[in-house]
Length: 502
Ligand code: CS2
Image 1 (cartoon, rainbow, N blue to C red):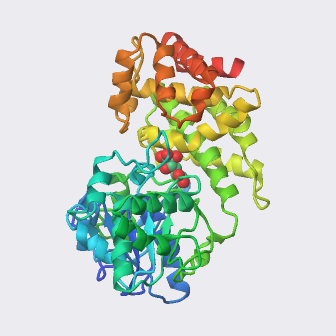
Image 2 (image 1 turned 45 degrees about the vertical axis):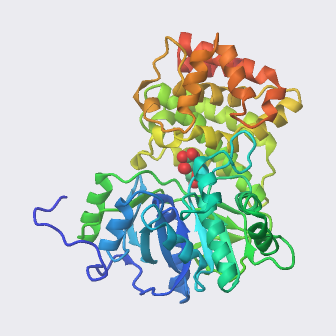
Image 3 (image 1 turned 180 degrees about the horizontal axis):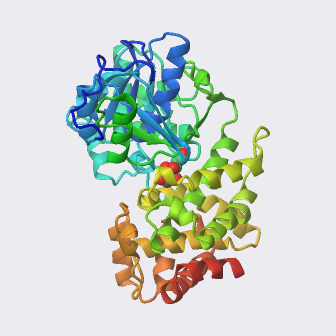
């Protein structure tokens, strides 16, 4: 804090005037949102605030955190207010969306989540649970029926704990009580996120005892009786983790204490299919774009931004860089980013007519270089086993089938594996060590059992780290292994040069 006298806590009474505070009082909950992290609070919530500024509607949001109590507790203490701090090199801009009507923690109140999804007033169930939260098998992409949580949720003797379990049990209760239509809206970085969510939901429903499966089948079917819509969406805004710096910024700007502000870049984009079963807020008033054909936008963003982001994070971490702007500031990382984007991702894309590609790419580099944001390599590098599955295999296969080696996609996988299970002689450093990943232990065990780096990479690819199909192209695993060898012997920059020179 910059002030010596303690500041009052942000809440509905201390909302200061003269700042960017949305002053409405939202009372009716129409949206149940699973995943109360920073991204949702700086993206969908902000669009919802703009929609409600334009016209009232029943679009208050009940935010559901999966396990962590910190945000939900703080929000309750702050009458569900928090601030969004937009950070650019030119300065910060603070606003308070004020669209949440409640906050709960699913792990503590699992049945309340099912009830909320089933409530007649709920029109949209939205999700930002990260790639990891969808409990699909990285190998097959299907619902992971061996996952302990999925198995428990299918047995159903306790309230559901997985996202897909919560959604299906909520829909089941809804169907039994009143069968009012509802939209399930995935806002995560999955290719075809609505389509994938619909499939995972149906796979869960089909794995239930026959009578329950039959009961749900019609309602979930994409046919005339369907009661549930699953629109596809492309979401984009870089949102780092909260630190004390941002709490101080809010204190300076608003003269109140906010324990859970959300930092975000100024850029924001949302493209959605307009297929809602029970209405939606006027998100277009916040700048959202509605179109029938979301896929080209999704793939453009998922590959050019997210795919390249992964390479920047892994190379940067191995090079000792804590943040994405520090990493992209290294000329060899910037060059590798340019090459993966242009040579390996771009040929797999159809660029939407309204996107000026050169401007889009130039803007990506500016966004990554936003040093005021301090986005950490460890944050982008976490959960690589589930993220890379969405980013790398399809464009890699396209190139391999055309007879071309996607060297910088191989470099992405090589750098990722060096962060997770480094070959002997390589110290990946603290930023790689801090990356959380559900596959880390398995990758280490595989490395220990392997006779050589090529043997390790082949096993990892053959056992489906990037889906099934790359196993048909052993040259890809060989190239990954070569680049790991260069990285271990000569360093990160040398590996990037080796990828570029091939
Ligand atoms: C990042 C994304 O962590 C990651 O994997 O690539 O979170 C990225 O910052 C957002 O998708 C930007 O919209």
